[in-house]
Amino acid sequence: MSPDRRSAGVDPAVAARFATLADARRAMIALEHAGLDGNDIELLGRPVDAARVPRDPKRADLRLVFYLVPRLAGGLALGAGAGFGFGLLIAGALMAAGVVSWSWGAFGICVLIALFPGATLGVFLAFERSVGVAEDWSLTFEDAPPGPVWVGVYTRQDEVRARARQVLGHEQPLELR
Image (cartoon, rainbow, N blue to C red):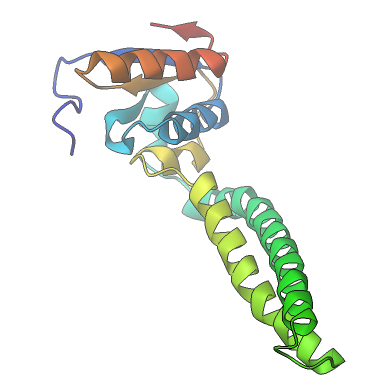
């Protein structure tokens, strides 16, 4: 836990109010992509308090799956395509240089050897860019009553505070403090 993390009576250094948990999730991901420590990010508000006591974990899990699957599929397709293209280049270069004699089998093996690592890397990068490490990130998939949700950033560093304010401002909050 970060030393800047909330203690009783400590307000966040920067806070932004969003209409829904999904909007708050996007803001949390944006903060993490901007280099803020996930341990310094916290969700606040009545919907979050209700989400901390899950009523139906299966529904939240299903929402998480529907959130991740399209992103991972996109990463898979992009990575496989990049691997396929890289494999074509390598196969062409090896065959043009005479390192590997021309045959469809050798050509296909070179392409497939690059396709699988490309697909794996694509899925990994898509997962890394889609999932937040902040402790409260998973709460954004829970059933919660409608209402505004605050994303709070706890820090004592001026540079981090300024970066958090800038990132949260780009996420179009209802209010920014």
